[in-house]
Image (cartoon, rainbow, N blue to C red; front, top):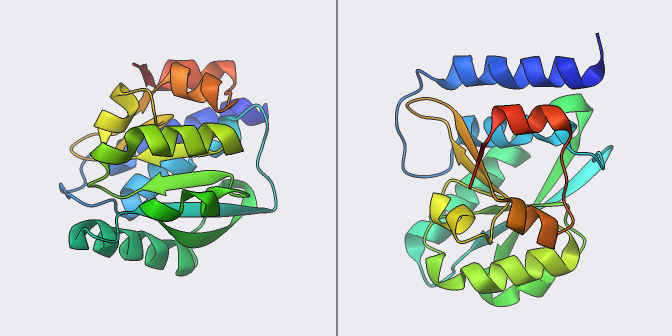
Length: 179
């Protein structure tokens, strides 16, 4: 079976598995799993090790707590598809230059006032952005919006993807809701 079919089926399975998960306000392991299942569908595959910038607002305690939680999940032997090893780094919103060299950025909540800066930094560094805050995707500043509860949905901003030079294979379009 071709790899893209295997990954598409894996993502579809992920949709079914996480569909019954309880609701949560902060990005959790289920949300991260949904986002990471899209990685094999990238046209420029990420292999080996991927640097993950976790963006947060240090002046917002909930944002910082969520970012620390995301990092803890990734640092606790989180399994990404294809044996990809993830190395997470906390990136305060006022230090977006630290995003350089990252392949993936995950946003904590509470960053709506910073969408433009995040989108610009991600585009300049060709970083795939993911967030459970769908407003960032709707503003065309994040590439992927992740929902794992009550059922799995992935939202996609083609504008943000094009700006960051991020592209996915054809199967991806069947699995996401384009904004």
